[in-house]
Figure 1: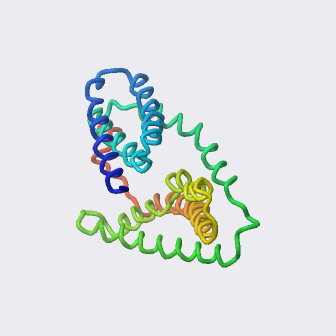
Figure 2: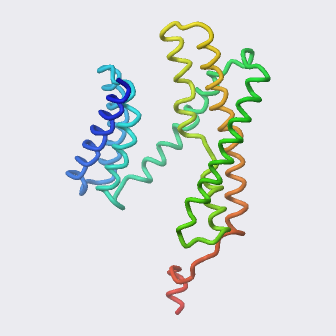
Figure 3: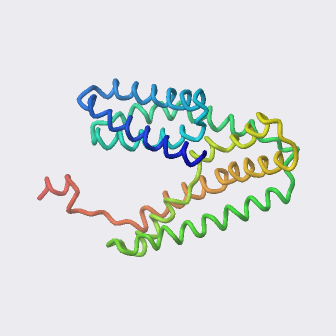
Length: 222
């Protein structure tokens, strides 16, 4: 059933996204309002129709398809401004979901170990995936560091498992499992977000070089 829901979300998301072709010449404000409407409508319809898993895939592929047909004429700045406003609410709700009295030391230790192992292999995998491109080793290392931070998806989905456990009135060991998943998601944000920000800001000037051939100021001087 989950597979059917995922495929349904994918198909509907792509179809709705490509239908945005008909408003490609509209103003960015109209496109922005359509995106906001879809971000609310798709989850609501998915819940009403009991296709719970469709909403995540549908939203992702709607955005992907819509931005493909809009090209450079997309409401990027408007959506960025809205996201800046909503971000504190998202992260505060995640923090409020954590019950520190129910978190054991072993739970934190296991979560940190899984996170460190995950980001290590993520760094290696990203670095190796750039081998066929004409990047230097420093540029590959910087790209890999840029993929380390985790925050948005983890913050959005962290508490869903715990909510589902409460919704279906499940007892142990499901409550512990859900709490462990929430703890791991939160610590992935706490650990990787600052590390990634520090690495990106500090290594950017050291590992990257400016391509003067694509510098408009340089072209004007010449």
